[in-house]
View (cartoon, rainbow, N blue to C red):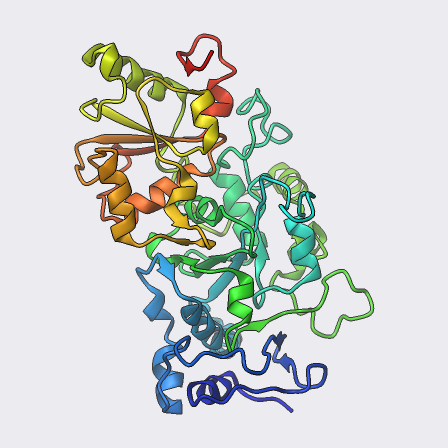
Length: 431
């Protein structure tokens, strides 16, 4: 028994939550439904009661355009649109036409600390393999899609973690994931993860249209608890269950995937060695990652700040360049001169770390620190521990309306991990 997504959403809008037999009726198209009786809240979905409106309006992919932060309901509607895309894409392929833009879900789960309950470090890749996942979701590991020492020893001689990748590598990964330049990217993570803004900025920094890169507010579990939230629950490693595993990648790239996980190093080594296939189809419109800077630029800013300010006013926001450090408690143990502390954990909802705080709350945080974030002539450099939580600061300023340019807003990729180990660089440390 198959029920269309449009009908499912219509029933949900009418207040009918479907308590189907969990084993028999959970399959919908390529996925399974994660719906439990009495878990639906009528305020969670705002759909038209007209099935025509559902088909023509709520599932219109253009409604995502320009929205950085999107709701779970937006994601549910996007999946319904994706089902319509499958048919349109097949029709375009049959007629030798370019497929229309599609929605691509990205699992950006990443953990930097052990689980507080088990005291074990969770494996996001294994959780992705085991499921559940959003439909046809790709898993991106920021430690693999990076300028690693393994692949680029001359570019990363100090083996710094998760450095932004070179454009060619990013383009190759996009090709393997079957992602096109005009696709809409929806980034999500599991409950307990924090750093989805890092993967959001990976796409932004590599030149994907910012209007087509979106962050789901809430976790995968939050999504599943909403009526209509469709997920894939089967394991990608289950050799006995191949019926549903219609993967998103083409046969050309299948050898680079194992249980749905892309072997980035093997992909790059193979394609880079072949001149006929080393130019990605995905057009990376930048020669290097946008807004990214190195330690030399940070040092110049610090020297300028120190020369223009007194030692008694180290953190003055009258400096030529504002340096924001988004680390947590580690900031107190050591930081760059003139840096201002803006903890990433205070930028998100304390009860749900995958939800950015309201603009009013963010505004208060910046104003309490006298950060002139709306001044486009004021240069701001963001730093953190290893170039991950800086993206929370960047995202917050974007939401507050800062006019971001390549020149006025920078992210220090190496961050404190690189800075602290260089004895020639100035530091403020506790004794």
